[in-house]
Structure formats: C-alpha cells, structure tokens
Length: 102
Image 1 (tube, rainbow, N blue to C red):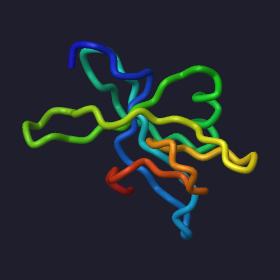
Image 2: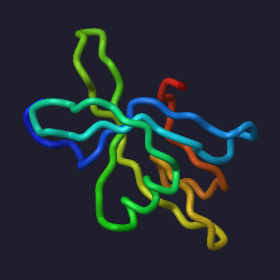
Image 3: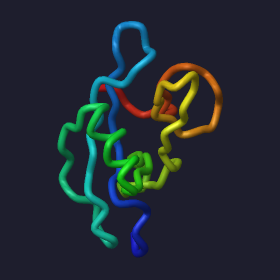
Image 4: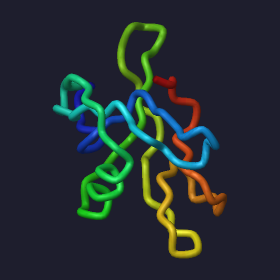
C-alpha cells in the first residue's frame, strides 16, 4: 500500500437474518501506507459517515499475505430508503460483495 484507498476500509460484514440489511462491519482506518486495526461499526454509523463525506472501500486478504483493495462503498437510495452497496444496483438490500462474514 502506498496511496490511500479510502478513509475507512471494510474487511468483514454481518447481515440480518433476511440478508437485506447489514447489522455491522469490521472497519479499519486507511493510514495510507498501512491498514489500521479493525473496529466494529454499526450500519447507521457507516451510513452517517458516508453521508458526511467520508469514503469507504472493501478490502480482502490476498494470497501474498497483503491487503488488497476491493470496491468503493456507497449509499444508494431506493424508495426513500438508504442501502449500503458496492454497486449501483436498484435491489432493495445492502450488498458489500463477497466479504467474509463475522
């Protein structure tokens, strides 16, 4: 890592029983040249930070034992409801791709 990928990096996710909404994520500060220690964030905190201008991206552990950048995370509004997604699909559910689960 040399350039900052985002303000925060998400490495794990937990969804509700119906798989429609995220309940929490493991979020790491992006320190530019390192990935900081992960802390649990609730869905509402992620939505609030995204709305406040913070950036998020997903990360995954590569076969070379280094973090790899995944996709940008954004809020998509469908029928006045906010969803956290890595794509702009109009599906009414949160989706952070294939991140590992808690």
